[in-house]
Amino acid sequence: MDLVTIGIIALVISTPIVVWDLVTTNQTSRLKEAFLPYTQFAYLACFIAGFGLLLKVMSFAAVLLLATVTTGLIWLWDRYVNKGAARKIGATDAVMAGAKTGQAAAAEMAKGDAKALPQQVPIWRELGASFFPVILIVFVVRSFLVEPFRIPSGSMIPTLLVGDFILVNKFAYGVRLPVANKKIVAVGDPQRGDVMVFRYPIDQSLDYIKRVVGLPGDTVSYRNKQLSINGAPVAQVEDGQYEYLEQDSGFNGSQLEVARLKKFSETLGTHTHATLVEPSKGTLQPAGVQSFEGKDQCSYDQDGFTCKVPAGHYFMMGDNRDRSSDSRYWGFVPEDHIVGKAFLIWLNWSDIKRIGTRIN
Image 1 (cartoon, rainbow, N blue to C red):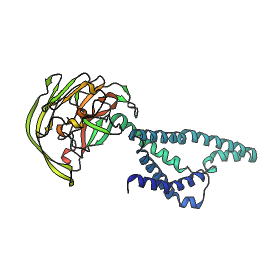
Image 2 (spheres, rainbow, N blue to C red):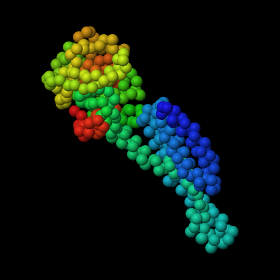
Image 3 (cartoon, rainbow, N blue to C red):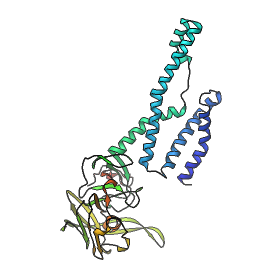
Image 4 (cartoon, helix red, strand yellow):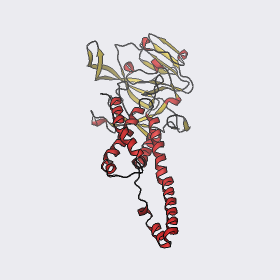
C-alpha cells in the first residue's frame, strides 16, 4: 500500500467526523465531549493527509506557503476578530440585562462576562491557531535561511555520499521569493567550485546538486578527461584510487558492484576538491546528450565537448565525472533555478564521522 492510498483512506475515514463537528459547532452534548479525542485526531488526520496529497500536485514550498497562509488567517481570526466580536456581544447582553433587571444585574453580568457566555473554541480554530507559529517558523527558516536535503545518488562522490543529509544556505546567492524563486535582494553570485542545489531544467519538480564549473560568459571544455575554462586547463593532480559499492541494474536485477576509479585533486576558483574518473569509459556518452536551450553554443565529438555559457546561466558538473548526469547532457542552469549553496553535512546514518563535515 503506497502513501497516496493511505492518505485517501485517512481522508475518507476522517472527513465525515470533521464535517459532523463543523455542522454541530454551536451545540454541546455528552456525545461530542465523549468523541472529542477522536474528533481532534480526525482533524489532524485530515491536515496531514491533505498536506501529503497536495505534494503530489504541488511543490513542497507551495504547500508550505498554503499551510502558512491558512493557519495564519485562522490565528488572526482567533486572536483579533473573534475576541473583538465576543467583547461586543458581552457588552450588548449587559445592557439588555440592565434594562430588564436593573443596574445590579448589569454590573454582575459585566463582571462574569465569561461565565455568562460559555463558548467552547471550535477544534479547527484551536488547531489552526496552535499550528501557525510552528509552521511559520519552518516556512521562514526553510524559505530564507537554510533547507535540508538528502543525497540520493553518487554523482557527487567523493565530496557527497549517498545518504548524506546536507544543509543548503538559501541566502548565499540572494534572498528569493518563495515558490516564485524570484530574487528580491542581491547578496552574492555563484562562484566556480561552489556546490550548488538547483531545480533540474528538464523537470523543475526535482532538485539537483552539482558543482559550478562555468559562469555566464565562460567557455567550458572537457576533452580527454581534462577540464578547461576559457582555454586554461584546470589544475588537477592524481591522488591514487577510490573504491566504493554501487548499485548496478543489469540483466540479473539490481546488485552491488565495486567501482574502482582514479582520484584527482582539482582546483576550481578557491575550492580544492576531489574528482573521480573511470579510465575505461569515454570522456562523453554522445547518446545521452539531449536537446536543450543554447545547445547551438556547444560542439560535441568523441573526445568531449566545448560550450559557451549564455548570460544568466551556469554550467554544472558532478565530481564523479563519468557517473554524473549534468550540464554536458541536459544543458545550462538558468539563474532563476538556483536554490542555494550546500555548506554542511549534518547527518549520515551509515557513517556518523561525516556529521559536521563542511562541503568544499
